[in-house]
Length: 427
Image 1 (cartoon, rainbow, N blue to C red):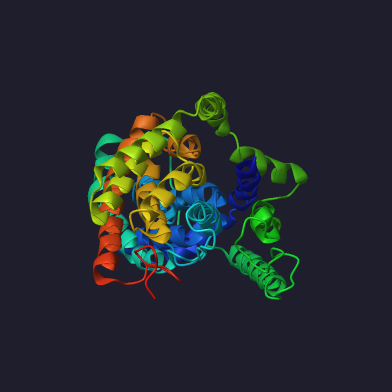
Image 2: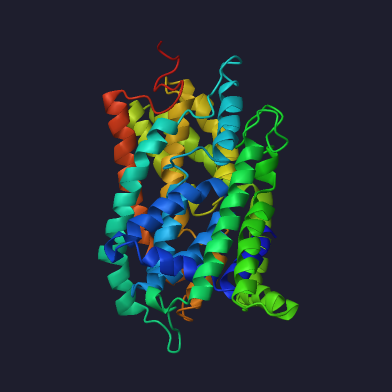
């Protein structure tokens, strides 16, 4: 599985002490009060790497929070909220955009065979929403979730944070860190140089970088693995953390020791998801609810609110954004076009609810892995603990994104490129 490959890379970078050094360096320049918005910002930005970001960012965020004297689970929660919010709040396009656009366009062509949906049809709304998500996440983390965690989820005895006193860094460690960072920067420059040419082999046949068939998107996991392993290995060798090949392999092994409970949970979860998917219950529910909304013949603002609520209900049963939209788009998009609502607005309303609800449903594919991260600090963490921890974020993000969507609509601000609110489009 792709997350296992990424975890091996994290194991090398962490076992060598490279991640610890990154945290120490960051700790020396970021004020404690700015840690939460910094984690939220990085998490929102990192959603472009799709599922790999969940594997990498959350353990690092927990270590950073712990080293600052904050609750490590609050770091995981803030990172989770930022990553999930990235589906509707993002600075950059990601792999989810062309996937959503494809389903929306195909559904729209059931009514209008010539209709074209821009890949960035929700980008203006998405970009603007990032600021709202960061502010909401900052407030919820520092004022609600972290105090709640200190009261109800004390850190297990024997768990200690990394010492982040920058004065304790030796000259050898500092020199090794500079060398490893220089190598990492060189790798990034080389990758960018390979991506720039329009005929690059790392691009999709049509020249795009973020579409699913782009080579770089298909190879994102091994790329991340190399970006973690190579600097981590260099740092480990220069600081004598990796004296032998056994030290190197042990670092990888340590990173997946906590996966036993996750794999057990994932096995039974996969059986349920398979049976649920083949039963077509989700499809029947989507069609039934959509037809009910159509029969009410409500104003567009109320109809969109109904779509948002419908998506939220279905999120409890189907967590995958693309799978759910594959079911809903052929029903909702033509139905709403028939009553004058544009496909782009329908897609935006879907993404608002999907982003807010994903973080509280146990059906979310990364839930077991996130629980295993939490159990590193609090063994009693379970599904209920994680869900209750994320509910304030879900409510806050939902309200913020709802205000952004209706605010754009009321002011008639375009929600993206070549996007309007009505069908047929008004030019």
